[in-house]
Amino acid sequence: MSIDLGSLYASSRWRLTDLLETIDHSVADVPCPATPGWRVHDVVAHLRGVTEDVRTGNLDGVATDPWTAAQVERHRGDSLATLLDDWAVDAVPFEEFLSGPQGQGGARAVLDAHAHEVDILAAIGVRHPLPQEFGEWVMPLVLGGLLDGSAAAGLEPVRVFTDEGDVIGPDDGVVSLRVSRFELFRGVTGRRSPDQVAAWDWGGADPMPYIAHFFVLGPRQDDLVE
Image (tube, rainbow, N blue to C red; front, side):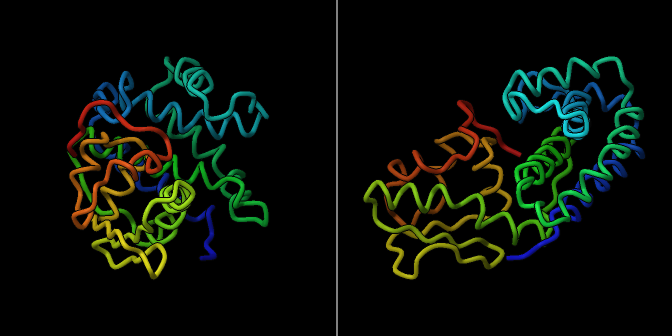
């Protein structure tokens, strides 16, 4: 589907900013279980650091652990308010890029922002469904690995049904996976363990051969319940 990625990214940033500006800033020190070793402050420092690195052209090792760790360390001494203000400044040209003809090249940043938005919400005890527009866009995107990988491995075709009404996969899918958008998104982005994904409704099929092709960012080793 055709969608304005800049608008998607901005919506996530605005929601997160509005929340963090209206609650006690001691929340900055709350650990984020979905991102082991990071606090809320560190997650925001990473999000702010992404737009900063895009602006300065610091893209060597983009999306690797050392690249993101450097963002967190660089802004360790900044207040949460400063991080949010500076993120807003650098985000404007970045969002304009995402809205432009080359914007699809930044799709991973949109996915990353929404994943970390949920990381922070879960850390402070808030849960809400994935935003409708984002959910419609991201489901086919993140399921490509499962569908293509399992087909290439010679597995029976799989068709995914979300609680929100998405139907993704071949019409002749033999294996039916039924799960909510929220759990599916959290799973493929590495916020669920293989055991948790295996416990979803796979229509009686053995899920283990499919799990090898499921995770976009790699699985957790321990269960995470949100």
